Image 1 (cartoon, rainbow, N blue to C red):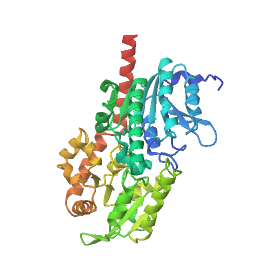
Image 2: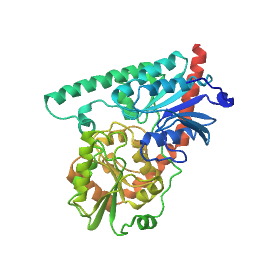
Image 3: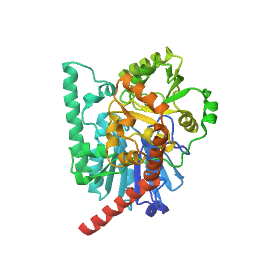
Length: 431
């Protein structure tokens, strides 16, 4: 890549590396929730931000709000890291780079692992890197169905190898990155096992306060839903670790709760990062097949941005039947955005026991036990019915309102900016 000079080069002192939504969109088809998180973050930052994003067919660049987006790398190729490095070096004033990362968003495990060498080269060039690590996997056996891990001796050996690779990778990441950012305190606790705690910063997953519900009557009219039914929502990619199959199985023969008819909506489709894997295709097909045998459960496929508000506004309860809490949930933040009642599995509930969410629950006079259920069909149905019939819904809306105020992207961006400014000062003192 030839070096080019731009008049605006000096404007860009912070860059974001991430998958990114399509131009003019926030929640785009074919990409992960990390993309919308990245855009929500950079567009709230002060000054001009350079965004280095993925492209599908061709490279391109454009200006949008306060950002200049350069689509300069193609995922799942080793070359993506050299393309990113060469693009960053075109901007000599660039000293701080935020990198969104999880273990599958950029490609296979080998491509993803190359990030540590990319970070090492940036460090050598005097650039501070802040890796926003969306997933922290402590034991792959808890994610067996998500990664296609089978049973038996061979699977146990695979699990040992995978766990070793993950733990070594986290240690290398902690060494190569200037700072590691995690989106919940529970993930911070996990990450501390592998790297220096002083290099980890918790910036809780933000809530989009620009989103707001529409009336339930209007939303149900748009979606052709009865006003008298209970509507239960699962939103997002249909993944094993998120428990979509468990939810479908739990409600497959349950057509009423509390004497009212139930409509279950799986508002999502195939995983953008797993859809080409054979074990995932088999899993997804099995979920769809089970739904096809019911009349009260519906799967929508990908939900376009313009319909997100309708699905959240129409529902009476959002359910998170996660088998494992390996990441902060963008869908949970949407539930807070739209102030919807919700319940979560006990596995996912561990993040509710740390500061922030726990404080908001306490303020709303909610116990953690009020919003969590054991990953058993009977307990899920019992808790869902209880929330739908008693006053917990009002308390949950109050909790969501508190988190909307405390975790807005505007507030979270301040933490990012303060962190970057603090590290600049530290480097100046030490330099």
